[in-house]
Image (cartoon, rainbow, N blue to C red; front, side, top):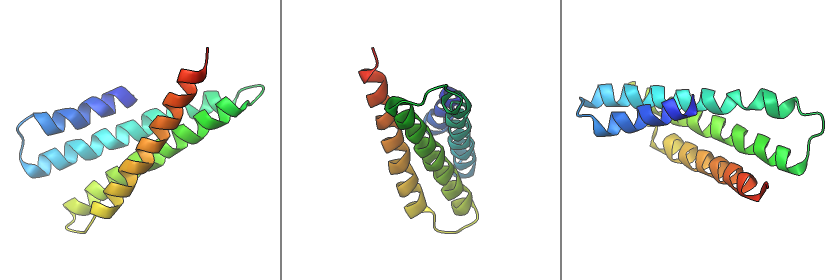
Length: 110
């Protein structure tokens, strides 16, 4: 699901579309990414023993959900003529931090 969202965002950038359609595709892609990140949470939360690595994975997934949701929200706001750049910027960084945390945990797991 996360990969579908990522691909959707990239296609919105690469395919020649009008600005409103590009925004709509990007919004949907960001929301797909948020759903994809949230799909990992039930497995992480159902672990018999929650280790520090599991906690980091939970935090990373939550940050990605929050970041991608903020990016989607900012796109919706911009389509409505409101300022959403700061929310998009913040969401991008939150999502990036979450991705780095999860990548770090994966690289430290044997």
